[in-house]
Amino acid sequence: MSKMFDSYSSLASALGAQFRGHADRDWQEWKESHYYETAAEIPADAARAWVSRQKLNYGGIADKKALEHLIAANVDQAFFEEIGRLSGLRRLELEWPFLGTDLTPLRALQGLEHLSLDSPRKLSDFSALAELPNLRTLIITNAKKMPDIEWLRDAHHLEVIGIEGAIDNPYKIESLTPLAGLRSLRAFLGVSSRLADRRLMPLAQCPKLQYLSIARCAPRSEFELLHEARPDMVCSWFDPKAWGKPVLS
Image (cartoon, rainbow, N blue to C red; front, side, top):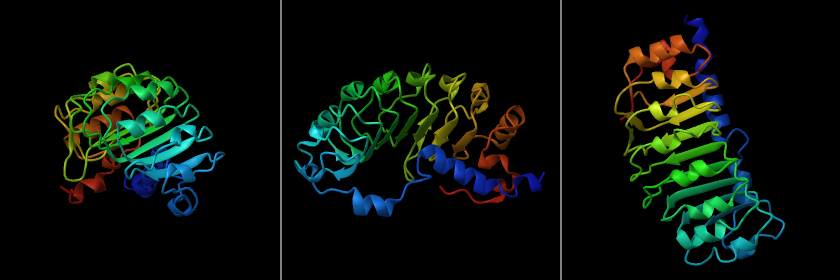
């Protein structure tokens, strides 16, 4: 059994980077080639851009129709309304903090495939996210007002779901039951999360689930049951050696 896990850690890390969309991310390239102080500096034919809101420096970004991948930080509702007019977006990363109050502008982004949302402080209703037909990856971090994940119950189009907390503020998931049976789910990411019912077995009902990255939020017996039911799945807590390591609080 021990030999089986010899390269397990590197496999889990590789899958984590893949499913988060970071496997081919070169941050140095982004900083040097795609970061702009103002939206006005973005070339009309640019497919990628990274902008952090400072006062009204985002003005005019709605005219950058060639954008397919946007990283935006400190986004308020006015900035978000402009982003909602970028109909060509395929990937949108809303970095810390997201200050929008209404997700309705996303409904116009029918081609969006990847969405990450960091620290949405003012939102409690996330149901609009489940209505994006081409969305495949959805990662939400530190959603302090999100009451539960019931709105994901019928999100059969999603392949990657991340519901994560902050290092100093874990997000409490009441239950994973809403995810049970999701037909397309390949990865669930739950770093810095707590699981109120401490049950993992609902995930065994996701036929395509390959990768689970989650805090040690359930008893060892639950991880063992899930591993027995789904030996094809990769999770660092399936490795017996992982249980001898200290857990970061």
